[in-house]
Image 1: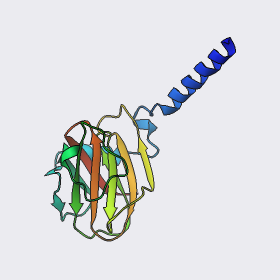
Image 2: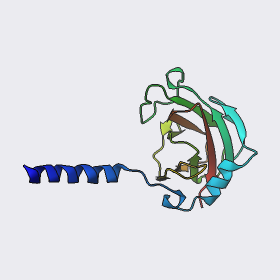
Image 3: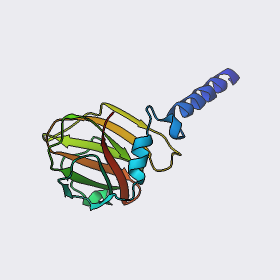
Amino acid sequence: MRTATLITLAVLVTTSALAAEPSGCDKFKWPIERERAALAAPDRLALISGAELTTMPPLTMTIGLKPSADVALPLPSERAAAAGTFAGFISVESTLPAGVYSISMSSNAWVDVVQNNRLLKPTAFSGATDCDGIRKTVKFELAAKPFVIQISGLKDNIVTLAVLPSD
């Protein structure tokens, strides 16, 4: 009986440790100094959900979001939004050079990118708690066509995003 209890406790502790997110700026999978600087820039665009941009990346913006239940995203997100969270989207109408771009966020959120009326799969992602100004960064390979960034699952009604060409 005692052995079974010890094994159960060991499994629970191991599972909790694996589920814990990394903490600290040095725990991102790649250097994030450029993304952190962009997110902290004072000249960020102030947008509301549904805005259409003709500006080319790099872009830094603060987006006002709406309750998830009140937002019709262009395509359903890959992750259902929890009750009481906020969501929104912006359309980038300019044709940018094809390549890999990072989308970095100040808060924990789910990000989808829509291009050619389909959700793109990220090529990489990284995140950590306890890093001032940045919570997550996700990389997407974009074609030289307009795209939409969908944000969902936020506890707050505002988020800061940076869209940068990847190094």
